[in-house]
Length: 304
Ligand SMILES: [Zn+2]
Ligand SMILES: [Zn+2]
Image (cartoon, rainbow, N blue to C red; front, top):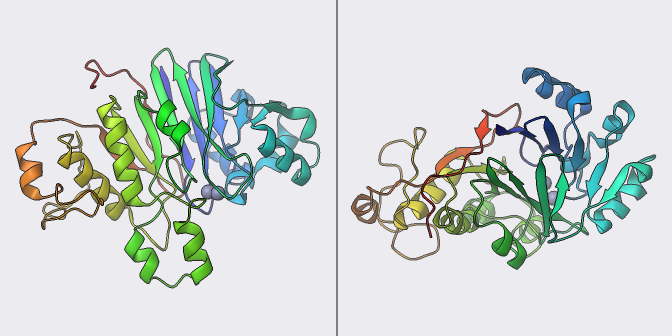
């Protein structure tokens, strides 16, 4: 059995656990070691059960707990070469623990195959991951200004994707953030908007993804309902209405044109006419605390 739990998701900290049989991998350590330990304990696990940590990039919300984690563990830290150099400059004693993650080339890690791919973010060496297991494939794509060609090439075909839906563009534009910060977030090395996430969600769903977890939501410029609605409307317009959408208030996605940037196809009529299609399950990763268990399982019917 292969499961994914997020332990935290957002600009105040990120960590995710992938359990594939007895192989357990942590993706990012952006919350305190104490919180990582507490999250694992909720799952009946301890730090000793982890086989490795994989780091997406060197921003604090992805490595804040790493220094303390190093002290209490002996497992290797996987990172791309440039991220590794950044980590070596910041964290004492990490150099001997670092293992190089090649880009766009699968490597075996326990019962998983891991493929790192470049993201577009203002941290040298930033990457996302695809994990392939005997139960299916899973992708992690957060902290990227746009969906890179490599992500678009490597991720379709996963069964489960943890996908950044950082902000609602209008909320960000009209919000209180200073101009430079708005430009950074909206820029090519910033974060994926709900609209970006919606478009890529359709691509992943068409390629057979059965579950999408929206992640790294901005506290100030997004809400779980806004992120879900944007993605749900795009999926519905593509004839891939989410299989379960229990948290969307009835009628909240009504009202004519979609906000997904792909024209008027997000209308209620379009949704109704394609209501027979069943798309991926949709959820939002909790900002703090452990998520539900996301099971990786191959869909019986693969879309093309
Ligand atoms: Zn981040
Ligand atoms: Zn970042």
